[in-house]
Length: 412
Image (cartoon, rainbow, N blue to C red; front, side, top):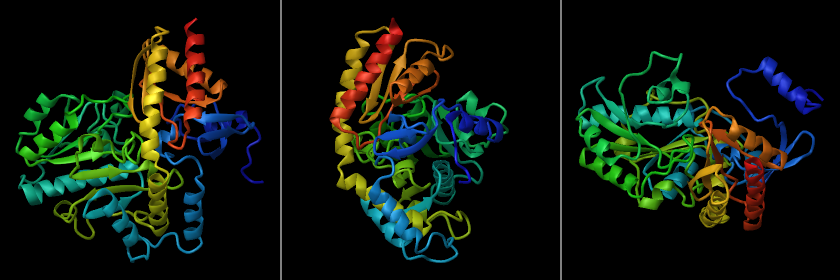
């Protein structure tokens, strides 16, 4: 059959020869997924502890989501927004009522949704706040990750995201994360239209800010007539043990940005939510996407969100997150190799006691893979550990046993 891969070595060699070298994957070639498990081309089974960066919160190939995809694919997949379709309005109503907003704008990738939010915030700043033309400022924070488009990386502090890709978009001020005092100063500037923030910095290594930080940020935004623009692409859709990570502090963003698990990993879908006074500053022809809001995405999104609710995945993530962190904290007491355990729900990380350049975290992930658990380092010495939210308590303990064995073996 055309496109059949015979071996792992062949698959890796093909990507190396014909693909762009913009990723550094673990040397595992996957061919099947179901629930919390992945299988490689040789038939070996693994626990997935990355969840496609939280895109498969509902588990791999969830049958309900796949059925919705198949059923709609047989009817209509794409019309573009040149016409209405019979599914988009239904989906917009569904997500608006679920997340308590007045308007929804569907896009495709998370980076697209963040670019959309930037445009919304700036247009609001000019038309509602009265900021002079081309003077709007969006305040972002260090170690953020919102995507890799040129607009998004203009607000990044990471050298790997920026080096060789300038010149960058003006209009961003970057301040320290988890620092209320710097927000007080930065947001007081009359040209600031928005604060752009993640409630937990996932790509930075699951950095959880101090309790109350997000609430104070929201209060400072309100005091200064600044929009709170929250990127919940990785933290949202039950990952942290709540429907949104913002829910821990009862914060409702002015602009909410979602993606990844909106489709359960079967289709690229992202979403920006806001009320009328913000969303309606963009007029016809000022923003759009050929695929954004297509009927296939609309149906898949609704089913993926319904699965999260029906299967109580937020509750499962909340409960099992404590069990997981307790196990990792106990492990930390037995080895010098782990210096920190942090996270919420089933978005967690362990910090390895070595330099980012040492390769220790990478080697631990290779050892984990050999024992049937897939994870990957971020920032060199941090291992993010985030399984699909359908995982059971028995499975969590089995995975903790694997992690414990690999860490303690490596310590010797």
